[in-house]
Amino acid sequence: EDQVTQSPEALRLQEGESSSLNCSYTVSGLRGLFWYRQDPGKGPEFLFTLYSAGEEKEKERLKATLTKKESFLHITAPKPEDSATYLCAVQGPNYGQNFVFGPGTRLSVLP
Amino acid sequence: KAGVTQTPRYLIKTRGQQVTLSCSPISGHRSVSWYQQTPGQGLQFLFEYFSETQRNKGNFPGRFSGRQFSNSRSEMNVSTLELGDSALYLCASSLGGQDQPQHFGDGTRLSIL
Image (cartoon, rainbow over all chains, first blue to last red; front, side, top):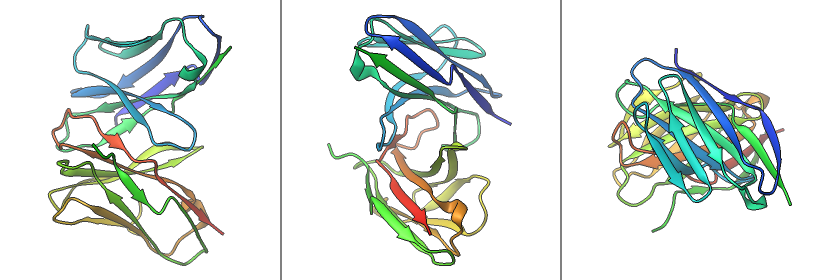
């Protein structure tokens, strides 16, 4: 059974203090790993898709990387507006779209 | 380009009633998926529809059902509501390919009294 875990559960950073969030997964035949950001009262907002080990994607202060068993979301010099819950999800080999989501990391960036 | 639209945003029901939630996907998207989000269980997959056919189903009881119309709009129905059905119900749409990202609406908050 596909499983996704994320750590830490919650993270508090000072503005400008860089850090990384972890997403570990077990899935046979990974088709894609997806990162989302979710603000309170809103649906998840798509950030990145990673398809194969070694791949990296960047967007503003965020950089996502992928290995065979985990993915990292690196946040460089975060700002308070980066505060949100970050979710990762995996898509296995089964036909169609059936994402398995991790529990998320709740990030707070203090000014 | 308009995003995924879910209606209503909030709903209050009592135990035993039934409810229908609606989702309008992004224009051109043919796949619509439904998820239940609760503080304890996180995001859990309910089912996916593609071209009016259910393509995938999660581990939820038969009280949870859905359908998709020819214009890709989708509805989800929950019958005989239970207190544990209180949750945020999220709809996501995509182009439908297996490695395509899903784009979410802001959900319907369902409260069962």
